[in-house]
Each structure stands twice: as C-alpha cells, then as structure tokens.
Image 1 (cartoon, rainbow, N blue to C red):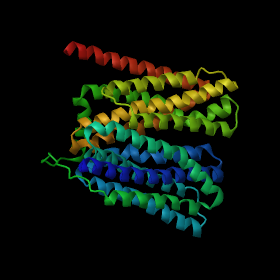
Image 2: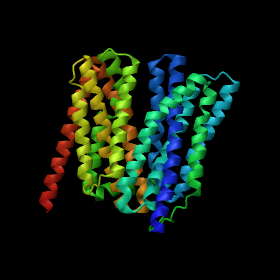
Image 3: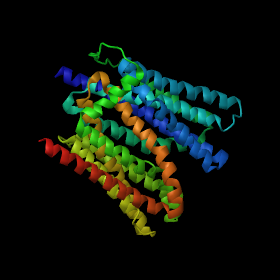
Image 4: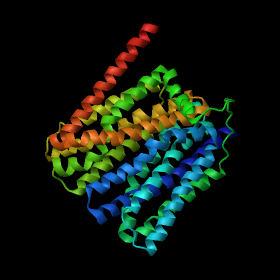
Amino acid sequence: MLKKEKWKLQFTMIALGQAVSMLGSHGVQFALIWWLAEKTSSPLMLGISGLVAYLPMSLLSPLAGIMADRLNRKAISIVSDMGMGITAMLYALLLSVFDLPVWTVFVMLCVRGIGSTFQQPAIQSIIPQLVPEDQLIKTNGWMQLLNAGAFLFGPVIGASLYAIFPMSVVLLSDVVGAVFASAALAVVKIPKLERKETKKSGMLEEFKEGVQIFREDKKLLYLVTAEAFCMFFYAPLSSFYPLMTSDYFDLSAMYGSAVELAFAVGMMASSLLFSSVLKIKRKIRTSFIGLFGMGIMSAVCGLVPPVMIGWAAFALCCTGLGTFGNIHMIPLTAYIQETAAPEKMGRAFSVLTLISSVTMPVGLLFSSPIAEKTGVDRWFFISGAAIVIITAVILCRYRMKYRKRR
C-alpha cells in the first residue's frame, strides 16, 4: 500500500511541475507571437515563426529519442527545461537594455523548439518507469488534462501579463515555470532503467530500431500509418480556426477566442474522463475511433452555413475535435508505454514527434493555396472527408490481413 501511494505522490509532483512549466511556456509563446504581430503586422513573419518553431522537431526528433534511451531521462528533461528558462532570462535581460530587431524572436522560438524536442520523449518515457501498467491510461489522461489546461489558461495569462508589463518581464514567467518543473523532477526518485542492450550501435541504426518497434507490431504500424496520413490533413486546421471565424462567419476576435476555448473544453472533458472513470481495454480500436471522430467533426465544420447558428455548430464541432483528438492520442500513448521495450521507448516516441512536426509545415504548404482559392470552409470539409476515408481504408486493410492470418 505504501509503495502504491509512493508512485502516486511522485507522479503528482512531476505532473504539477510540468503543468506550471506548460502554463509559463504557453503564456510566453502567445506573448512572443503577439509581440511579433504588433511589431511587423506581417503574415509572412508569423509563418516563418511557425516554421522555426517546428523545424527543430523535424530535424532533431530522431536524436532526441536516441538520447532519451542512452542517457539519463530525468537529466535530459531538467536540462531541456532549464535551457529554455535560461534562454528566456537572457533574452529578457537583452530586451530590457537594447532595442532588439524582431528577427531575434526567431532565435528564441527555435531554442524553445529544440528544448521541447528533447524534453517530450524523455518525460513520456519516464512515466511508465514510475506508473503501474494498469494505470497508464489514467495517468496519461491527467497529463493531457494538464496540457489542455495550460493550452486554455496559458494564453490568457500571457495576454494579461503582456497588457500590464513589458515583454522583458513577461519572459520571466517561463523562467519561473522551468525552475518549478525542474525542482519537482529533481526530488523524485526515478527507478533505474534496466537496459538489455549490450551492443553499441550508430545513431542511424538506433533510430531504425525505433521504427522497428512499429514494424514488428502490426496493429500499431497500421494505426501510426493512418495517423501520419491523417495529420497531413488535420494538423494545418489549427491555423485556419481564426480565418473561419473572421472570413467565413465575418465575426470578431471575441468569437475566435470562444472557438479556441471550445476546443480546449473538449480536450479537458475527455482528459478528465480518461483520468477518472473510463477504463479502456482495446486501446488500438479506441484510437482508431478517435481518428474517425476527428474526420467527421472536421467535415461537419466545412458544411455549416455562414450564419450565427452555423458558427455555434462550428464551435460545438471544435469541442468535438478537442475531444476526439484525446480519444486518439491518450490510448495510443498508453499502448506504446505498455508494449515498447523500456530501453527503446524514447526512440518510439521520437517517431511520433517526427510525424507531427513534419506534417504541420508540409500540410500547411499544401493546404494554404487550396484554402486560399476554394475557401477555408471547403478545406475543412476536404480534410475531414480525407481523414475518414484514409482511416477506413487502412483499418479495412488491416482487418483483412489480420483475419487471413487467423
């Protein structure tokens, strides 16, 4: 009983530390983008900011996964978090003394992207070292709930601080979050990871071993393949929410923020269910259901009429998008944590990070001209229909092969 309560206490400390860090990060990220928008009023500059934030994930995810498996995961997470915090502090000091050019924001966003790239697989791999296997769905639900809360309240905090204080002071909230998260993780004793690998291999070979985890588990391979193709259509949608509100529905920024709130509410509600009452046995099937739901909600978004009741339906569908996104992601994360070898888990999660980091910019390059020409509402429908069709085809193909083998 004492051991059971101990893991709960340790997980709670890590989760709360990460929550404070995410609040600071989301707040500073919002403030930086808003500051850049005010300084430049340039969509191109905002586009570049998104690119430099995602580029480190695309380039460094394989290395981040290998390091999470080779080195101390706790140390990687602390160094990554503190690295982002120290960078924010140095940038704050420079801003308070000099009138820095706006391109320096890109350096900040790039450094933050690098830190997140190394931190994510390390933290995701630490959780199953602490948490019993039958509790992974609940704990991942709590982590997603905290992430949704940070996604919801972080920009509010960032906007409030930015309205009251100069940018140099706002940046310090990231420092506070990094210190809090690192201190919480530092006092938690992580069980020693028994590494079964004895032969040292090159980085390319080790990344291939991470990919091999998915190739050996056919259920997981089909699911992640579906996710990769679906994210190509789904990932860019987050950039089009404001355009749906302002251009399609011809409504103000207040309604745009309500849409973001609706999405976050969906994330929080589903996270709360997973962390409390839901007990999922068939995680792969549940994750496929999440993909189907994401597609259906996206397609409906593209069908609503440009009137007030249509906007209400759009906001409700955005709640569904947040909900089904978690229905896809939480069981998938728990399944990998249960089935992947502990010493290779970092590489497995780096593959997922690589998928998400590549599909966003590539999807935007593909979708932006289409949405520009046909209308953003049409792209929502095209994306949703594509996600449903892709998921159905891959699921049917898997079921046919699986039945033949049985």
